[in-house]
Length: 165
Image (cartoon, rainbow, N blue to C red):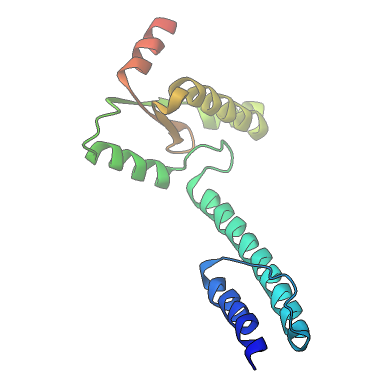
């Protein structure tokens, strides 16, 4: 009976670790009678690890879809306004300016040049605003509406922008 005690305790620990996402793969136990149980537990731990990893990827993908604009890849209105409100309420005054950039006559551009051109234009504007104002994470940019982008920046960014304009 003593030969079962330590191996069974290791198997019990393996099961107890599963909810904490600790997926241990026990090497073969010294007890022949527990070989099938050991192999089944190891296989179950490996399967659960794969399932949990897949679920984490799915959750991250859903978070991205919920918070980011599909066309531009920038923060969408909902997430942008949350982040903006957090920056306004923060004691850490990291940002001290904001601006709204609008692609003027987007509907007309879409009618005359086609929606694919308008989408490319929005991607281009969003990418360049993001590259300019989000350097070193000193600011952030998001798509506020179909033709509008909100930029929140630090004073250094606006000075660079004015000098470069």
